[in-house]
Length: 514
Image (cartoon, rainbow, N blue to C red; front, side, top):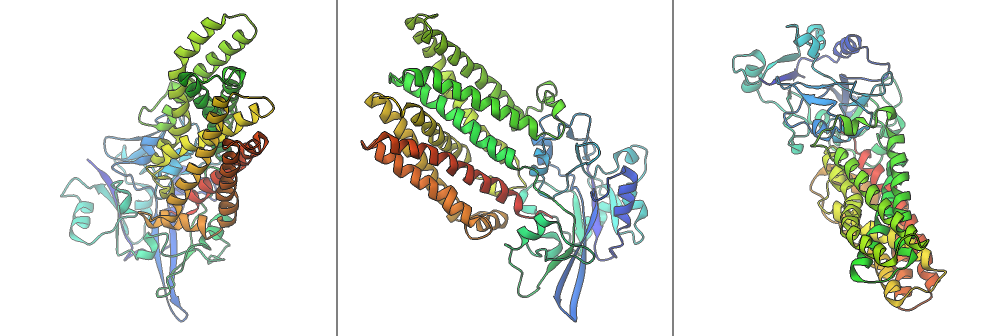
């Protein structure tokens, strides 16, 4: 059994009855929608046309929101309906990033995710969804798509149909008949300065200024819903804090395995930075939840397919290893632990520290990979790029830590190599990502915003320019120049990463999905 919708836009009159019925049935807060009608106008007066599109959850066969949800608050029923349990939701907003259709919102009353659930409570009683019952032109069809004798199966099989975002390969189960391409493709009809009866939300309006209008159709969206960015500065900052902490520990563990003596910098300062970085990261992640009191649900009600769950496991494991390293270093520094014993303990912790450090830095690449609605974040290089960034900022903070002293030549060389090569590698990977070809129109649109649009100044001067300066200053120090210059480079790369992540996080969410 596979329940689905078929929406006949040839007969839809854009009356919004489905929207009103849905809001009434589910007590959806004012200004939020599970089902809404999008208007697109094309042409130039007086030769203009208006087309409608009924937007909603697509109840995907391979639903990315179900995979990314860390607490199994979203789930697929046996009949194919993608439903949700707001009693398990922690408000992490990952599902909103995974959905390629802008179908999920955060309910202002419950502070949990919500969306069209096919009126599952009505279906269980043998009733049709509220939107189907109320539609005056029978433009919304519903039923079992796997039953060839059902009305919806016959309608879909006997007529040309379209789906939204087929390139995402999610197996959407909402089929459109007679829909204009500009209605289904959010890039084909940018939002202007005004809607029919209102002003668009500022985020959608400003992002659309970087999207070109088709000179032939002149299609423009004249009515749609607001879709703000789910993730903001806390996620941007978290990418830096965990990179700095993990990078410092990666270098300390690598130094220990190579027999390079970092002294107190490797035994105390690096793990202290690692523990502090993880602590701040944890605070930021919990703070960003809309239901922070439920954060333990990640461990108590886990979804083993979600990289948000595995990320929490990685952070917990890294915290244990980094804390053990720090405790050992402090005990050795105070004389409470013999030097030989401390060295043996750190040798045993070196490989776990290396692994947990790398995973702490890089797991976000897998998490962002599950955010299938954000094509800019789908790079196969992202895991490795995050590790390179960690070496850059970790090398930067450790260079600052040793700048006032006299590190050994080997220690100096290792730290400045991490700083210089990390910054240089970050710059090269960044330019390859943004100036190369992109596999989807959505990724290309986001990259254009970064390199030539609304984020270009911050990207080129902050993300790229400061990284180049950091690599240069680190290289001067690595070549034997004053360590103070390398320390300045260590400061510069922190700002470079923050600038880059600010652009990366925002631009990925700016391309409209509906």
